[in-house]
Amino acid sequence: MLTHVCWFKKGGQHLLQGRRAVYGFIKEHRNQFPVEKMCKVLQVSASGYYYWLHHPVSLREQKEQELVVQIKEVYQQSKCRYGSPRISFELREQGVRASRPRVARLMQKHQIQSVIRKKYRVQTTDSSHAYTVAENHLARDFQAVRPYPPDQLHV
Image (cartoon, rainbow, N blue to C red; front, top):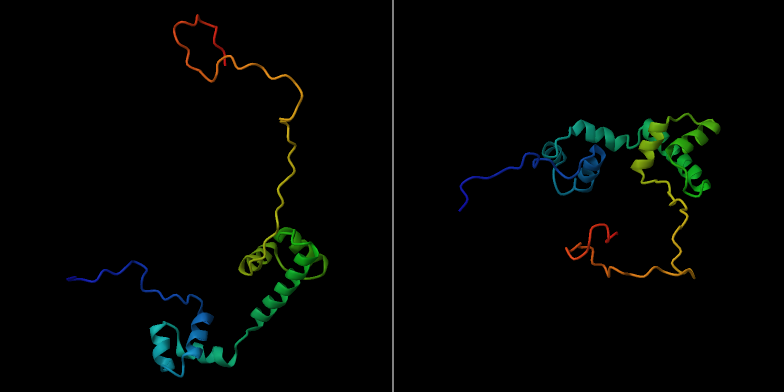
Protein backbone atom coordinates (compact mmCIF):
# COMPACT_ATOMS: atom_id res chain seq x y z
CA MET A 1 0.00 0.00 0.00
CA LEU A 2 1.25 3.48 -0.86
CA THR A 3 2.17 5.58 2.12
CA HIS A 4 2.67 8.88 0.32
CA VAL A 5 1.34 10.62 -2.76
CA CYS A 6 3.83 11.74 -5.41
CA TRP A 7 2.87 14.99 -7.17
CA PHE A 8 4.42 15.86 -10.47
CA LYS A 9 6.28 19.14 -10.72
CA LYS A 10 3.73 20.78 -13.03
CA GLY A 11 0.83 18.40 -12.44
CA GLY A 12 -1.39 20.91 -10.66
CA GLN A 13 -2.32 22.67 -13.88
CA HIS A 14 -5.61 22.05 -15.63
CA LEU A 15 -5.90 21.29 -19.31
CA LEU A 16 -7.84 24.45 -20.11
CA GLN A 17 -4.85 26.75 -20.55
CA GLY A 18 -6.47 29.83 -22.08
CA ARG A 19 -8.57 32.08 -19.90
CA ARG A 20 -11.33 32.17 -22.51
CA ALA A 21 -11.37 28.35 -22.65
CA VAL A 22 -11.81 28.29 -18.86
CA TYR A 23 -14.62 30.82 -19.07
CA GLY A 24 -16.31 28.76 -21.78
CA PHE A 25 -16.04 25.66 -19.61
CA ILE A 26 -17.57 27.53 -16.66
CA LYS A 27 -20.41 28.81 -18.86
CA GLU A 28 -21.20 25.27 -20.07
CA HIS A 29 -21.24 23.83 -16.55
CA ARG A 30 -22.76 26.71 -14.56
CA ASN A 31 -26.03 24.79 -14.15
CA GLN A 32 -24.24 21.83 -12.54
CA PHE A 33 -21.78 23.61 -10.22
CA PRO A 34 -21.60 26.99 -8.49
CA VAL A 35 -19.74 29.57 -10.59
CA GLU A 36 -17.68 30.89 -7.68
CA LYS A 37 -16.51 27.38 -6.78
CA MET A 38 -15.49 26.60 -10.37
CA CYS A 39 -13.63 29.92 -10.59
CA LYS A 40 -11.73 29.09 -7.41
CA VAL A 41 -10.86 25.56 -8.58
CA LEU A 42 -9.81 26.73 -12.06
CA GLN A 43 -7.90 29.70 -10.58
CA VAL A 44 -9.70 32.53 -12.36
CA SER A 45 -11.55 35.44 -10.85
CA ALA A 46 -15.33 35.39 -10.75
CA SER A 47 -15.43 39.08 -11.71
CA GLY A 48 -13.33 38.26 -14.79
CA TYR A 49 -15.79 35.54 -15.74
CA TYR A 50 -18.80 37.84 -15.37
CA TYR A 51 -17.05 40.58 -17.37
CA TRP A 52 -16.32 38.04 -20.12
CA LEU A 53 -19.94 36.90 -20.02
CA HIS A 54 -21.23 40.41 -20.77
CA HIS A 55 -18.34 41.49 -23.09
CA PRO A 56 -17.39 38.32 -25.00
CA VAL A 57 -15.28 39.91 -27.78
CA SER A 58 -12.85 42.75 -27.16
CA LEU A 59 -11.97 45.43 -29.69
CA ARG A 60 -8.49 43.97 -30.11
CA GLU A 61 -9.94 40.53 -30.88
CA GLN A 62 -12.32 42.06 -33.43
CA LYS A 63 -9.41 43.76 -35.22
CA GLU A 64 -7.42 40.53 -35.03
CA GLN A 65 -10.29 38.57 -36.62
CA GLU A 66 -10.58 41.15 -39.42
CA LEU A 67 -6.83 40.89 -40.03
CA VAL A 68 -7.03 37.09 -40.15
CA VAL A 69 -9.76 37.35 -42.82
CA GLN A 70 -7.52 39.66 -44.87
CA ILE A 71 -4.53 37.34 -44.37
CA LYS A 72 -6.60 34.38 -45.61
CA GLU A 73 -7.70 36.37 -48.70
CA VAL A 74 -4.09 37.17 -49.66
CA TYR A 75 -3.11 33.59 -48.85
CA GLN A 76 -5.82 32.18 -51.16
CA GLN A 77 -4.95 34.66 -53.94
CA SER A 78 -1.35 33.45 -53.83
CA LYS A 79 -2.50 29.83 -54.21
CA CYS A 80 -1.30 29.07 -50.66
CA ARG A 81 2.31 29.90 -51.55
CA TYR A 82 2.96 33.14 -49.66
CA GLY A 83 4.49 33.16 -46.20
CA SER A 84 4.36 35.92 -43.59
CA PRO A 85 6.89 38.28 -45.29
CA ARG A 86 5.05 38.37 -48.59
CA ILE A 87 1.60 38.47 -46.98
CA SER A 88 2.62 41.40 -44.76
CA PHE A 89 4.02 43.18 -47.84
CA GLU A 90 0.76 42.62 -49.75
CA LEU A 91 -1.28 43.89 -46.80
CA ARG A 92 0.92 46.98 -46.63
CA GLU A 93 0.27 47.51 -50.36
CA GLN A 94 -3.48 47.36 -49.64
CA GLY A 95 -3.12 49.95 -46.86
CA VAL A 96 -3.43 47.57 -43.92
CA ARG A 97 -0.90 48.22 -41.16
CA ALA A 98 0.38 44.95 -39.74
CA SER A 99 3.93 43.97 -38.93
CA ARG A 100 5.51 40.77 -40.23
CA PRO A 101 5.83 39.24 -36.72
CA ARG A 102 2.14 39.89 -36.06
CA VAL A 103 1.15 38.35 -39.39
CA ALA A 104 3.42 35.36 -38.65
CA ARG A 105 1.92 34.93 -35.16
CA LEU A 106 -1.64 35.01 -36.52
CA MET A 107 -0.77 32.62 -39.33
CA GLN A 108 0.73 30.21 -36.82
CA LYS A 109 -2.26 30.55 -34.50
CA HIS A 110 -4.70 29.74 -37.31
CA GLN A 111 -2.51 27.03 -38.91
CA ILE A 112 -1.92 28.95 -42.14
CA GLN A 113 1.30 27.68 -43.72
CA SER A 114 2.84 28.38 -47.08
CA VAL A 115 3.14 25.41 -49.37
CA ILE A 116 6.83 24.89 -50.04
CA ARG A 117 7.49 23.02 -53.23
CA LYS A 118 10.58 20.94 -53.58
CA LYS A 119 13.01 22.55 -55.97
CA TYR A 120 13.61 20.83 -59.28
CA ARG A 121 16.84 18.93 -59.26
CA VAL A 122 18.57 17.73 -62.41
CA GLN A 123 19.05 13.98 -62.47
CA THR A 124 22.60 13.27 -63.56
CA THR A 125 22.60 9.49 -63.51
CA ASP A 126 21.21 7.77 -66.60
CA SER A 127 20.93 4.07 -65.88
CA SER A 128 19.32 3.17 -69.18
CA HIS A 129 22.28 4.11 -71.38
CA ALA A 130 23.70 2.02 -74.24
CA TYR A 131 27.33 2.34 -73.17
CA THR A 132 29.46 -0.64 -72.19
CA VAL A 133 29.72 -1.38 -68.49
CA ALA A 134 33.13 -2.20 -67.02
CA GLU A 135 33.63 -5.78 -65.96
CA ASN A 136 33.46 -6.64 -62.28
CA HIS A 137 36.89 -8.17 -61.63
CA LEU A 138 36.67 -7.94 -57.83
CA ALA A 139 33.21 -9.47 -57.44
CA ARG A 140 32.75 -7.14 -54.46
CA ASP A 141 35.75 -8.67 -52.67
CA PHE A 142 37.40 -5.52 -51.35
CA GLN A 143 39.73 -7.29 -48.92
CA ALA A 144 43.32 -7.21 -50.12
CA VAL A 145 44.71 -10.63 -49.29
CA ARG A 146 48.46 -11.39 -49.35
CA PRO A 147 48.59 -13.27 -52.69
CA TYR A 148 47.93 -9.96 -54.46
CA PRO A 149 51.09 -7.92 -54.98
CA PRO A 150 50.95 -4.27 -53.81
CA ASP A 151 49.13 -1.81 -56.11
CA GLN A 152 47.25 -4.58 -57.88
CA LEU A 153 43.89 -4.13 -56.18
CA HIS A 154 42.26 -0.75 -56.76
CA VAL A 155 38.76 0.25 -55.80
